[in-house]
Amino acid sequence: MKVHRIELPTPFPVGPVNAYLIEGDPLTLVDAGPKTPEVQAALEAGIGATGRRIEDIRRVILTHGHVDHFGNAMWVTGRSGAELFAHPADGPKFAGERWVAENLGKHFTLAGMPPTFLDAFIDRMRAIRALVEYAFETLGAELVRAHASAENAPSIRVAEKVGMRLIERVEYREGDEVWHGVRYEVRR
Image 1 (cartoon, rainbow, N blue to C red):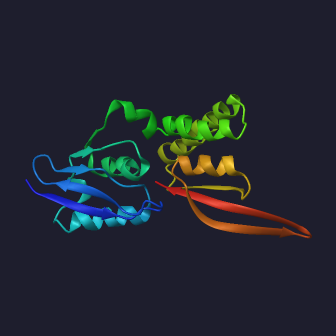
Image 2 (image 1 turned 60 degrees about the vertical axis):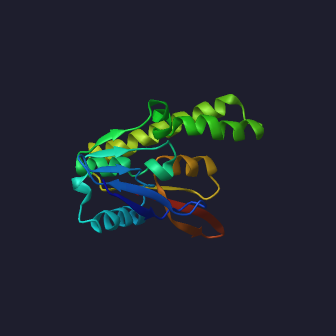
Image 3 (image 1 turned 45 degrees about the vertical axis):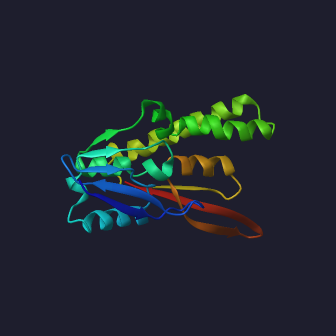
């Protein structure tokens, strides 16, 4: 059995992460990196260097529920039809809910926010995730775009939690009024 290490870039301070392609029956990918076009290109190139393609993968194993390890998992399984393996306790993390509850909940509490704020935040995250899934799966959209005020931190966090990436910062002027905004996108 041969194991190939594939280094994947991340947009996070942690720097690059590793995925591993394990030759054998079935061809197995361990971790898939975060879901960005750069990572997808690096993953395709790394797998291609072994003479294989993403479509050849039959099993994906996720080591743990951090987005820099599981973000591309659905992209890989969608292209390959691979079976996905992960610890059941990480399911809420893969959905984005456990991370929000455990991490943002602590920060919201320390910031003096009422517990209802966290509940409303999770509800909004679920709603936008459902909207993104509807756009891709039902409408066949290739791209979902969101605009928000640059000062609207909760909306920006929700966009990031559903896999959207910052594309640009914008400034709109109308007379003496100035509005600073951001544009986020996620591709199928």
